[in-house]
Length: 400
Ligand SMILES: Cc1ncc(COP(=O)(O)O)c(C=O)c1O
Image 1 (cartoon, rainbow, N blue to C red):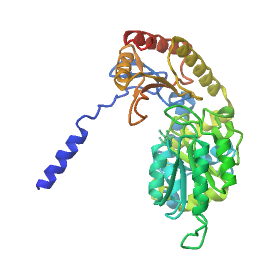
Image 2: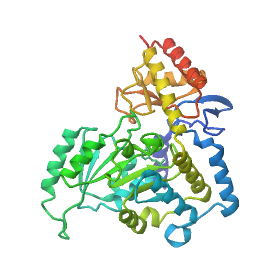
Image 3: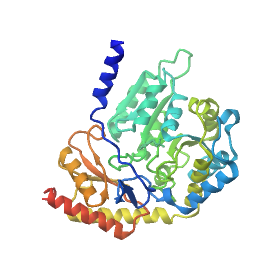
Image 4: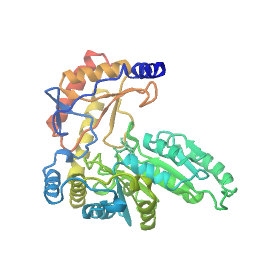
């Protein structure tokens, strides 16, 4: 009994300083309603504005009318015609032989690594990879993990030389250990890109498999938003491409795209697919519609990039340090964590919703407000946000 009380006291201690989350009372468009007030949505990863797009909403509604809501376990009786259509559409869009969909990119990353990598295999991972990759590597049980310095190809090569030596000793079943290089495509805190061409070159040289998590590149980078692999003209050169349907596609879900044999392997063996429910009907229909919209036109992607260039040049002109992003993710660097939090609170008072990013999300001394424009913003919306940034910066003496 005492142990029980102590346990809950300990939990209470852990959660007591937790923040009450903002509760959104509207759709995720250019503006949000929060606590009854309208705020400029200046930090969401609904890059293309599809969360409130009429075509996507209609597709979900029509599918509900036709098929209802729930599905099932894919391998038993849960594979719906819409799942097959979505997977085909993703493969065509990405230019891969096939694709398999999961309930989130978190699960797709877990499946991609856990299903392939055993405890005697080797993973070589960028130090700033997303938490879902870190967790996936843990889940694989691999005893041979190498972390290379962020986007540092010299360091990657040092690790690959070590890996080469290690692979001379076969696994207990006599096979050579697999070696997988894994990286985010777009790094979500700074908006910088993985040096994929160099990674592919090194992977060939050292006979490694490659995996890229393109959660923030899908719908943003490459021709018509086809992602980072397309951006670097490397279609067909990456073994495993993971994508998210929750960011530019604005729905829910994740996928693995690649060669048909690889996708068949995941279809049959991934525990995240065997033991977890498939996407619901409205999610699947909405995601399918979002992919079709991008397949047919690049106009939303163009608007996103116009807005990005406009916003960034205005912020820079005002004197803000916006880091070295190569994507719409725009980190506005702050002198300290305290200033970042205060800056965000004051922006909120000015009608702008842009959250502070502080340690442990970024390293100490790198506090920022992460601004993300979207295709749903008009120039006047961006100007509204820029004016607020200028006012708050002056009040807080941030711009010297
Ligand atoms: C790089 C990266 N990978 C994966 C995920 C997980 O995506 P999902 O929301 O689809 O699980 C995220 C989400 O923040 C991400 O930024």
